[in-house]
Image (tube, rainbow, N blue to C red):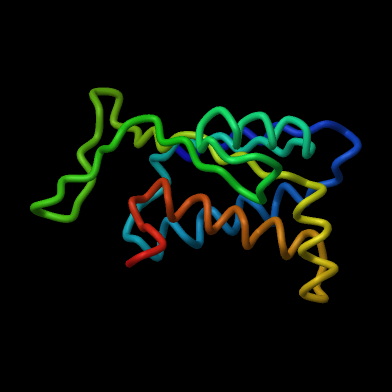
Length: 133
């Protein structure tokens, strides 16, 4: 079972199928099947700035934040240990739509492409991949 909940206000147009496809692609690249639960929230800069201040103690907005549910990674075997329901509850990815739009303009590609880049970045953090690796 693959369960992805995408939350966004109507003013933020999203290609939900492309997001789901990107999540599946990243999961399969990391040897995970579809037994995953994940939430993605697309918010405005005000909400993102509040989250950034609260959780990272940094002022202003950012493009993406990841909030893992639990760390299921078994460091010795480099595998994930599933909870009793058999589903890997990864957590939540939060994306600032206005920041994604600005970055899309900066890098000269579509907002949908930038959203997918941010989804992948956030998902990698939930899978235990950090910037220094």
